[in-house]
Amino acid sequence: MTQTLPAGVQITGKITPAVEEVLTPEALAFVADLHRTFNPRRTELLQQRVVRQQRFDAGEIPGFLPETAAIRAGEWHVAPAPADLNDRRVEITGPSERKMMINALNSGCKSLYGRF
Image (cartoon, one colour):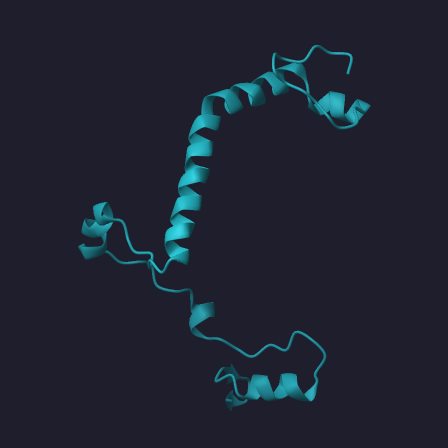
């Protein structure tokens, strides 16, 4: 690489003209700054993930955060589902083999000819 790399930055892959075009000194300095700023928190979160997974592996069941209880207990609504989702139709997306046709007929969806 003909350009000077920021302190602590090392490129171990093959350097091509396209790589030099993308990995400009400014871009590399930006990524290095991001890493220096957020890497301690990132590694802390990864360690917390390992510990949490160990608790799950030991049988703990995941739950909701206590600090979000007021949101769950409050009165709120989501928008209604779009009409396309409420009125499902059968669509065969592969070759019309016997098993696929049976699954379509047993799906409970509407068809052009009434209810399956």
